[in-house]
Length: 149
Length: 414
Image (cartoon, rainbow over all chains, first blue to last red; front, side, top):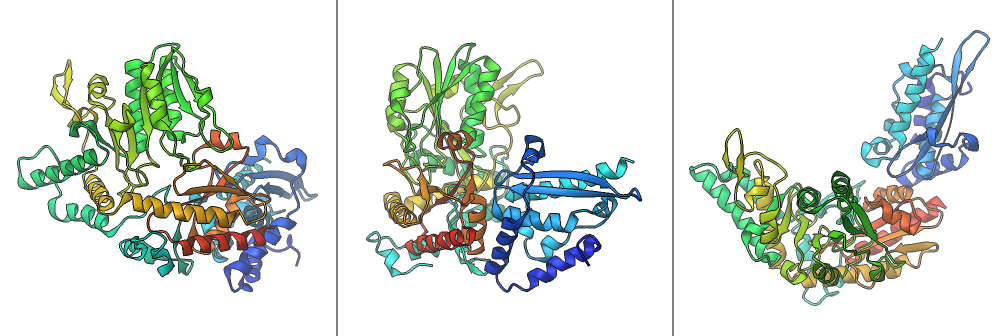
């Protein structure tokens, strides 16, 4: 199964299984840092003020493009970046799980994997790393595209 | 996290005895002993302070200055005893010069609102410095906006000190609002010198003492300032407490900012008259439990030698500075000669958020970001720093743990 044929729930489970291999925090974070380094960068022309999701500590850029298939199914393609590498690793996971899904599936599936892999603290508003704001923004894009016929 | 070695860093300074008084230091974070280096954000509290605050609720909880009943009398006496403790601690000349606030921010907002109304006219100027906390910038911007005045800024040198050759005093300067100690850089500023210059020009002086109160002996008469604000929670006291000291003659002229109970003398539907100092500035029920806890925190500090605490923190600062500078690409922001135990740094190729996260995983609490001093970050051309800030209970071994943690983090991130 490739990422697109999986459901969001399946993709989340895959991330959880992947992180279950790590026994301590250091391995977990090293993996996250690697993911961050591997994240395909957002196109430079999309790294603009309007695409910034503001955080106090680190900044996140998020861009969404929609494609419509022959059967009229819409899928959202996200690209993103951050100035902090751990935030970037988390973004890479979010993009992997949510990328090229239909707006409806994004709206219908709760995101539980960040909690399940023990990284919930990064979603705390206290971190102000832009991540929880980014998740909200992804849902908002999905909502916007689901209502546009 | 400490050994006998720490206890001899300063002769007669028993850091273990001090640590035993802070219940929170026994907590584990991510399964590791807590190393708490975020004291400039808020310090931890000794057991005596926690007990004093809860004892108020458990035994004498009642509103102050109102009841004729016994509990109210006891609560009032306990609160007013705290006021006297603070008066004596900062050497104010009269107890009614001590106004209780919810913290430094509230104190400066009171000062800016009231002084703005009293002093500022169109075209007047308020002078601050480029290292101020947002709490000592924004209230003055608001006041300037309300009265058509302008904010003028003392520039900051590369070492993180005021450039005293470029103090923008003019014949329109009305207020000088400056920090005693920088929260981001740790710089101890020459406030007394600048206040003396301001006074000669008839400028009213306001000092943000939030970062000085936990580390320095404050003598408001010696400093010669008109107003001095600090927080309780950064000086081993409860959150939600603070003090605004004001020179009596000025406080008498300043209008109140908040109306309500406790601050009035008489009220008719046409006109009210104000209560005496300090109550004119203390509308509503104060944070009685917190104030009692703050009084206890000050008494606790006085039972030790504040100079010895400062010397110990200085030893930690020197050690941290020396060890951190061995890390490749690390730059310390704030290299003034006179500093409290605060060290801010950036590392080439490492984002402060990432470093803070990896230190947290190792049980080490530091602060990362702009520390509510964005103009200062701009001055140094950085988006944020990692900041370690020490208190009397920290140890050399903890500093070593942090340095090792930073090295590990850098290795992971590069």
